[in-house]
Length: 122
Image (cartoon, rainbow, N blue to C red; front, side):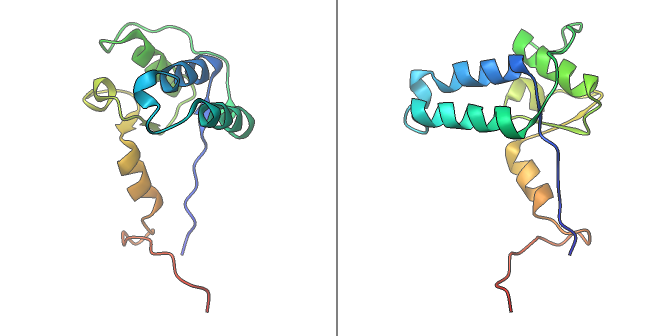
């Protein structure tokens, strides 16, 4: 069985936006501000950080989403993972845009197309 891998690429602009969004009151039932600090800190330490992207012509209704497209295309990413419908509904982009659930399926699928099932060591 082949182990699936990926490289998580972030930029300061993305991390700042993530932190600001996750600190909103509406997310408090899912994540505490302490856990937001831990999450963003881990991403800063473990992800590949690149400079903020150069602005592009708008392709979405949200300038922050355009920054994500610019980041993904700027680093020639194969895939952009987002749950934002402004992004997932886009077509004809230079980068494939999938949801977090779709990414999990990709990571759990073997090279033969069968679902990856974690087995107990024998």
